[in-house]
Length: 538
Image (cartoon, rainbow, N blue to C red):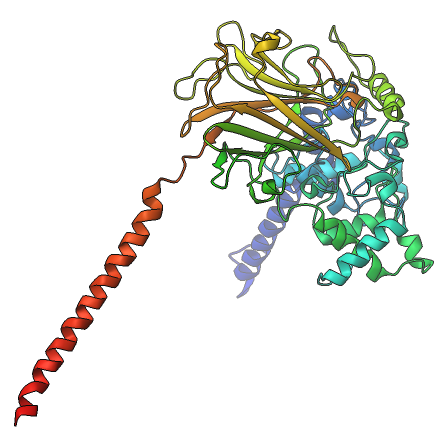
């Protein structure tokens, strides 16, 4: 039967069949285009080989070409052991857990966040591919995240209880009494691979792996960080040594040790004018409590050999005051040891054994101590012109203030390149320092007159922006020579004193306003008296 002999409705049925066929074909085409698990793995492999294999290795074993310069080492995906999880200790992470680390990275390590580099489809495909490196994902049931309640509100009582729990379960043995990683066990910490590992600095919550909110901290307390010395405390809750409420109090306390948010990085450090009198001469003067702090990030020196990829000092807090005659710059940073400290000698040796140092001149053990250098241009600069930030060069030298923990007094010098310092004569040293190390923190105060008699000392003019940069070394982390932390250039601006007119003008204006008000009142009274006078005569 053909269309000419078909009964009524046959054409309609054939049209419907044709439409159904086209829909099926379209559906099959869409299925073919949709990323299947195998397709996702192919895409994930391409993303991994391009962006990840250099550190984690082509086989996912953490042995990429760059791995030897990193501490901690890149993740070995073949063992299926992940630090940041929403699952229990020793369990596999969920896909969301893996994606979060890909998105956000691991602060304090070489692992960056990729959310702004890779598309969501690429990151999802990467998650699928990473799981193929370990047989445990294929042979284990789907990971089940733990049920975490919402954080209760904080209070002074909870913070006090959190501090008690901090000491009760001996968090201070690793993290130290103030949370800066200077506990008695800190020099002995190793991960499961036998590599030295640092206790987290709890005063830098923005550097916490897995996030720094109260909820994030509570999750880490419940899950631990697999492969590291950081345990889970869920067993203490189950054994009723502490309660879940105690763990929340501990999370609130840990959160309280650092600023509420990541400190902003500002290009200009303002040296406030000290109207009350001379600038402080000690780092612990109460006057510093009222002076604004500026955060200066630090990174390892990796431009010139010997390079350093394992910096201990990741940032400095800078404060400055001047009184029109003297400039005082206070620099504060976390450091778990007052180098040189014999308790950390073995640590420094392990660090140098683990780090791969192909550069000639690399150090082989603990440095002589801790060190901080503040550098300025040796000669006046115009506009944004500045010397090379690694202590200048032959064309534009740098003017240095250097403090060393192992010797008395600072060194004032000129440099024409990293390691090419030329100290000024002993009778030309115009900079003084005062330093205090306490509870895992250095506070170093530099002081110098705004103008000196030294021909090589650049003047510090009030109201101008002076380029300023920093370098720092932790001797007990094996840092010395070129191997330390560096910053880029910032600007130091000396605040103008408030002119006397600023104080007199408001008083004069108030007196004039008060006098004008009295005059207006007196005129009003006279008009009223004049209006009442005729009535009294009648």
